[in-house]
Length: 576
Image (cartoon, rainbow, N blue to C red):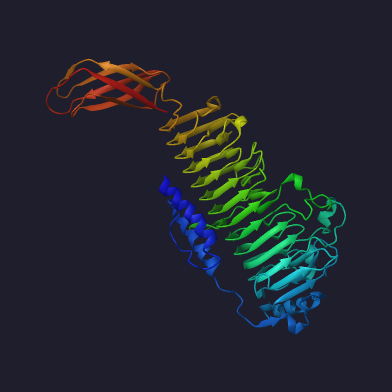
């Protein structure tokens, strides 16, 4: 067990630490002590391509200085940079280069559905700086709006410019929303009119695009947002201090969020006190948010999963990684998430009354730590209204609840270490199962916590090979419950065992002998075992539940000659 955990911790550390500096290729097949077959190979290939993939637009360079940009942090460089972007787009693509400097930009769009400073209108365009902190796009004082965005495939928003774009790349620069000095307008209810559209970078209706080595900070809404994207990669970037989400992707598939540092989502320069937009008390925003993803068809033999892999997340008021509104097919692996908020570190929370349930989730090999002063009912991993979930190899420290399953079907919680759970009102629940069906809880180490069942009914539950800190509670909420070999406590060990003495017996060749023993709680059809402190030689030993509370032990002699056994002590165990 310790060896498995050391490899899982090493995996998360390697994903976060080694990839940004390119010290080791991300092609190891080590999955933290567990192979995930085709999915594991898919993750390996995606990470390798995201980190080491080449620029999709190795074409002509358009320096913004050639179009009049000053980069002095004072001059309005909006028109000059936009001219360079337009020139690259009209030429069929190219690299818009920002030499070192701070480029001040203002809102250039009308107050329609979206406000922005800079707009990418054509495919095959790269916006590239000289490095984080060296090349800075900064919202000017007294302004508001999104710093940089793409056109959207919606004529109601972008009119004749509307189209789907591909091969957009943003790299090696800083985007600063300047939230201390921008204009804050109107009530929250006007958000839908674009008054508050103050994102750092918005990529929508793009395919095969990439954001890498970009630092986004001090943004009034989402740091990096987008919708209806296909195969968008966000890698080796920093997103911090955002009023809403650090990264938010809507109605998108094949989004890869890999090896980024994300801090302080749901934040504001003054804690949300004086800026009318903020509502930090709701804590509904996340470091990484996936939402509204459609059901994705198979591509070859592998689903087009979205991934959050190898990210470092620190949050004080918001959530860690979240998915909602039918966000299907998601892998969350090898992330390190630390929270002082008492909110969900990983939350997959789908709406009620969706049929079929959203499907296809892996939460594996993450290190999750909650330092909330009053953990209460904090859900470290929360899954609501979904199916086909695998939670495996995670290390959970702190919080009020470790893993919560609420109306979840056909899922497995396996090989996790859960420690420091601190919520007596929830019976120190390392795993809490509510109204769920077809759940296997196997080989978990629940230090000082246990499994709790609440909210009837839950059915077809298997509790196998776990190390439990206390007896499971709420067993009355279950139907068709099986439990076996749980170290620390096995709920049916005492009532489903019995001891008896079998007197000396001689069994003729080809014959048999049987003994009926009462076993409280045994039910027909359950599997039974029998054994003795006396050697049975070559005799066959079998046991079966023949009636409620009754087990029959049978000795069969197929040796070809009579066999005599002395009296012995026997024990029967019925497996639930």
